Image (cartoon, rainbow, N blue to C red):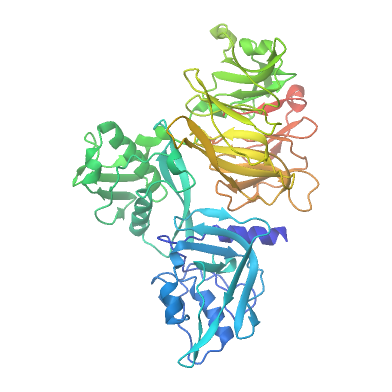
Length: 593
């Protein structure tokens, strides 16, 4: 059953509505066949109009199939409806994806009832919103005769799509916006149709979506450099990997620095199709110092994925003392090196976080009988002693702190109380409260993305007492004073007894028990909750208590098992257990972030 669900979810992630609309090619289940039709290799399947004198069953099944073909604004699907229903129908508002294993709509008098488990809803911007475990897709097809022909006289809530009707019809894409510091890009995932689009059509679609601004997921937590009213004047052609983006004069008001950042948004977004772009504003080059194409390499410094080389170094606590780990990649001997040149080494730490440059750290510890978060530089012996330790008082159970790319330190304490407290220590040392309402859920894990806008949480549900994986957004408060954390979204990862979660490259790495597994295993899930699947490389024989990972694509995720031993995957996906005794027993691993 779990494998079947996974297949459903994998297929479902490829859907979208609105300007993105529903895809129109791929494997389709016909109403008179069982199972999946053979994959046509990307050949479009065009919906057919209703046959003359078709019975009610054929009309309902034909209507469901026609909802997968949006190329002509669902004109064929409307032919299966009464004129009144067709006029009221708004297929662009959302797509409801339901379980492909469901029974076909059942006759209910003259009408037909569809009842199936809902997998997800995709909104008009292409955001994937996972359905809860008990959510259903219910719709009554009211049937009447129009001029002697059966037609559907009820209006669906957007598009109803059986997941087996979709394969590679829509592409997962990312739009790129800036974090509050306007220095780090944030990926905003959406699902857009392929529909045999040319590279130019796909590029035009991407830029049009980018210029609409961030989706609801990021809201005003993200910044688009494009001024209001910015639009592409003509379509975006792509030739030999080079896109040409012609913007209207709304972008002409930008100063040089912001023009470069708008170029970064455009080039990063288009990088999914082409590696370079020529961008003009009202016919003139967007960048005054670049009259030709803008290469991806020239804007790579805004990398949202923990770009510093130091972010790939593993650290950890051994006997409560801070250490750095060497030899994971096989280039040197495996060893845990004590960071005894740092003032933090004098403390007995409960947890340990390292900033993304790898030069500072923070620990949860006790000083003078009081629980604190202590932070200081991490300095090698040859560079002299580290700086003086600074502390922030904490109360109750305190989660492992987390850094973002701007060196902000995020601290969540009182986690075992009815009012958990989230604070951020900014780079200048100021400590600010960040209001958040967990609705009674108990925070277990906090991991900030490098952008400082997206938060990853493991929360124990107040209702079910089970751990869930959720994402949230840090944004400016509505009154303009400070920040808030909201937009909490349960990713609905199909795992039990979830123990930990962490950012991993462009996705999220979760440890939990799949159905039938006695131990927690590593799974990957997209940041919007789509496409949950086991970590490639085969399931490990050990269970997982803690996960060490971050968004840097060069990071090798490390897992601590319930016995305190660590393991990781090499570049060849083979599992590695360290041969160093210190690494093999008792190290609590952590990566920068």
